[in-house]
Image 1 (cartoon, rainbow, N blue to C red):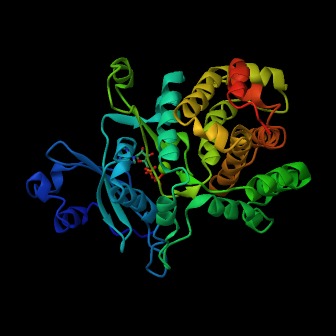
Image 2: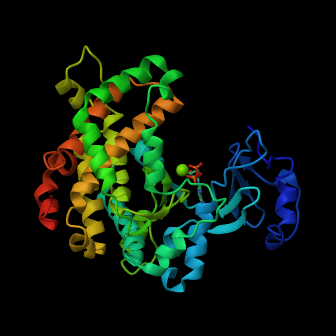
Length: 393
Ligand SMILES: Nc1ncnc2c1ncn2[C@@H]1O[C@H](COP(=O)(O)OP(=O)(O)O)[C@@H](O)[C@H]1O
Ligand SMILES: [Mg+2]
C-alpha cells in the first residue's frame, strides 16, 4: 500500500499548505509526535494536535476519493448557516485536499473513543447513550424532508465515488456469493450455507431494503467506534446549562440522504455486538451457561439501548408520525448491522465460528420477528418504548 504522506514529508506538506503558519513556524521534525501509520497524529508546538487521514493509492496511482463525503458534510454546514448548531457534534476540519485524498482534523485530545471507554470500564451509563440519541436526532430532525438539503446531497460529481448511502452498503452486501468466499473456503462457505438455508431471513432483508425511502441526512456508519466521548462527560452533564455535547460523531465517509432508521439500527446493533462478542460459545457449553458467563451481559446494555431510542424520540418527536413503522425498521436494521458485521469479520479475519453462528441467529430474530425481539433488545423498558410508537407494524 502506498501513501502520499509519511514522517519524512508530512512537515513539508503542512508548511506548503499553510497549516504551520497558524502555529508559528517550522520547529523541526523532532518536536512532533507521530502515531499510527496511515492516519498520522501530530502534536504541534502550540499544544494543538492534528489527525491526518489519507487514502492509499491504487496500482493506477489513484485514490478512490473516499473522503469526499467527510468534506461534503462540512461543506453542507458552511452552505446552510441555519444548521450551525450541528458543528458541535462534528470533528473540526482543518484542511481538505481532494486531489490527493488527504483530510486533516483537529485531534480532540479531551475525548476518547467510546468503544474504548466501554471495553475498558465495562460500564454503560445510559446518560451517554441518551447523548448519542439526541445528537443523531439533531441531524435527522434539522434535515427532515428539506428539498434544498436533499438537492445538495443528490448532486454528485460525475467522477465522485459511489461510497455513500445505504444502497452502497446493500450492494456490498449483495456480493455475498460463493465467489466472494473463494478465498475463505471453510468459514465463508459455512456462513453462506446457513444464510442460504434461511429463506425468511433473505426475504426480510429484501423487503427492508426495497422499502427504503431516503428523507434526511444520515451518517450510515454509526458504530460505537465512530463516536468520541468527552473525558469530562460527567462534569459536563452535571452543568445543566452547558451547551457542550459530550459526544462527537466522526467518520462521515458514508453520509448521504438516507433512511434514519438505519443509523439508529446500526447503533442498536453495535450495542448488541458488545454482548454477543463477549459470549463464550462452544459445543460443550449449553446456551444457558453461555449466557450466564457473558462478560458483558445483555441486561447491562439494555438500559443504554432504551435510553438511546427514548432520547432519539424525545428530540425528534415528528418521526413517530412521519414513519409509523420506524421502530420496527430500527429493529430490523439492527439485525442487518449484525450481518454486515459477520461479513466484515469474514473479509478481514476470515473467520465465522460459534460466535458468528450465534450472531446470525440473533440477526435472524431481529429481521424476521422484530416485535417478538423487542424484550431482548430493551429489557424492562420494552413496554415503555413500544408505547412511544404504538403502530409497530
Ligand atoms: N478528530 C478526532 N479526534 C480524536 N480522535 C480521532 C479524530 N478523528 C479520528 N480519530 C481517531 O482515529 C480513528 C479513525 O478515524 P475515523 O475517522 O473513524 O477513520 P477510519 O475508521 O475510516 O480510519 C478513530 O476511531 C479515532 O480513534
Ligand atoms: Mg472509523
